[in-house]
Image 1: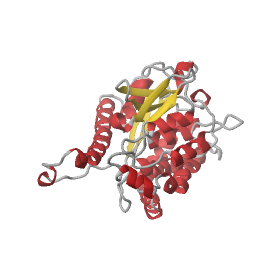
Image 2: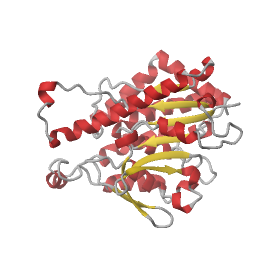
Image 3: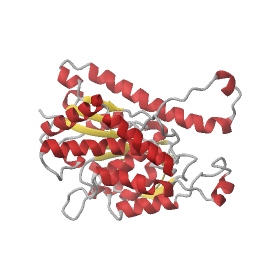
Length: 342
């Protein structure tokens, strides 16, 4: 039985450039090994999962053109970050004053972000996307996770505009205001960035796949019947000295807590999936879970540092990661396995 192929992308703001470039290289390898210059990620993954910037990337790969083919290549998708990131994370003097640098109000106006999402996703609905996906957000009114599910979107209750899904999953606390989005029957949902609980959404994707049927593949698949490719955004735990943090109050803890939640969730999810796949008996099944976590060598770790210099450094760090012989071979293996399971 061929494996259900899952792509999962972490949150991380402008650091989405890192998985974006890695996936551009993977798409190039898919084109080489399939001998199809038009091959796209959407042709070889059965389920997409993303949080925040990973949600935006996942959605970008699934928007159809007039021929029901992916409108954007992986390179097109990451170029949106490289070309427009500086505009999205631009803060005006008035916004700085009004928010006290993000302490009493959101740090950035959502205008430019919403403009770019509108330009990219236009008037597409979830039901229009080419493949199933699950995108995470958090419902602040009801105090619970909210998952946008393309595979349930034929039901109007679960159908949302793609641009609204992207806006909701990227509504990072203190950075952008809470998103208020409506489904096709006009019910409103006030939503935050899914990174507050599932910055690494690969376990979300795994559990969702367990409830699904896939044409030509296992219904309600277990880990044995799955292949998961999970990409990080260069998250790493910051070190804090006890003497420095012991008397911190709410204001000083805001930013570190967000970082700790994101990096902690990503690491914990990776640990659990490793445990799940390690229980499998067949070595080929054990080796069907891949976690690619690029290292930040020169770029700033800040999610919102979209200066021209840092955009360049993020790109360089990503290119340095994929130029490593071990990583390059791993991407080759992933591409070949994806094609074998088509």
